[in-house]
Image (tube, rainbow, N blue to C red):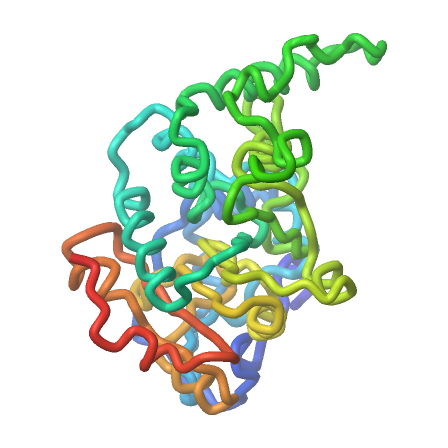
Length: 348
């Protein structure tokens, strides 16, 4: 941005709709959290001074709020790449799920899956984008493997951690004890045939400097290595799905859609790759400066204008705010009228 603040750059247009008509936002931003404090320490500036350099704006078209100036791609990539490279939210959800600790995020998962099956009764495949722990994969694990103990996944974490910390790379560096034995889950590519789990689960890897990736590690194990063959059957990409002509029944974007510099491009990829898409978004109020932007209430109308069926299902899932955390949930489809599909549906 300037020689004095080379870690900031201008974002004059709305990151969601591309509009150039904006006004100063009256919303209160969140205080500096873990990721912003980590970046401020690296820069050598106090978090309060850093936040004061980034005024908040509101899009007159779609009501998205965003910071301008905000961090350069290189600066924010350092946060999610290594300075704050572990997705604390995702790992904390996994820890709560594995230990049976009550958590607001988790109590919504059965309701979310029920609503998805009401919109699309025959779900043969499910995929999440980038984070294997923030969404429905843990709930589907319970449905697919009811006899497997949740806490057993800790055994795989310990095993992987020991492997990755080992200084030796001889053939026997991996324990003779298989991951299937540790977790109580036999991968579909071993079980095969009639024993293959249903629905098939995938993790879609979509690169972004604003999202956690290879450094999302806890106790020496990466989130994706821990989740593979337990929570999801195989990794893939949007491009691989397209090239194979595969279409997923449902794709979930839980706590990830606002971690892309061009979210509408990623959302379009998801909609083109699936019959149904669900996204978990942060509340409009109190934008978090670790994110460039916060989706506004105009997102639904924006998608409808583009010919996409879009329904805000927040009140249904949260029982009008009585369940879960203060999040928003939207469903999208380019093949069905979601309003008609969900008309009269109930979760209680």
